[in-house]
Image (tube, rainbow, N blue to C red; front, side):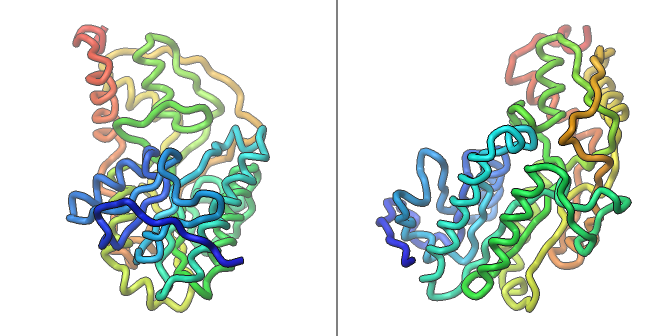
Length: 315
């Protein structure tokens, strides 16, 4: 089916980059990071969609790189609401079909999940060539999106980035995502933090995550020449237990934080952290923000946003 297009109203008609999902946490930070390098991307959100009634935004046909960061599901909602999973799949399908008419195949960069797609019977750290076997609906949805990109290789250049748990200043404590954001919200409300299960995770500062995405733009020409699809882990490469994370947050806050312990949920993964050596080699990218200072920065930003007096922070 041939896609139809509606005209763009953007003044930046020469922009080579588009960000789909620009209003989300990662999307907002990516737009700012690109702007700092002199790139003003086309931005698409729920309020400014890239498609209407199967009509694709004309600007996308001129873009060299398209970041697909959109998504409405979380690990918990994907289990409860399969229709939202199907909606996300359909949105990506619409984009990929519409891009058949590009004069030159664009890079399409998918934000996938390094924390949910790998086989849990394989010991971490996970490498890109390790077997995949998602054990929850969210991981299966992300792997299905990866397959959609790979099936479109005749007319796009797929780049799949499997991200670790992203955190940082400005992250909202949405249901099912972001233990750090949830814990900081609990601290601000002076309530115990919920420690669900006892696993190790890989926590990546959002500025390191966006640096990897900007590196994709910087290495655009090299990535286009790859004969095989590009799949890269993007994480800190460091495992951190929830108990360790709690201790770091207490150190940053300067006081004890009460804990309410709960058993792991059925859809929760076992220990997960990523080997990021391939991204170091291919993108000249490396994570630079350690968890302890990154957590302190995130906490300070949240305290400043809520205008808490200093004594509230230190009890």
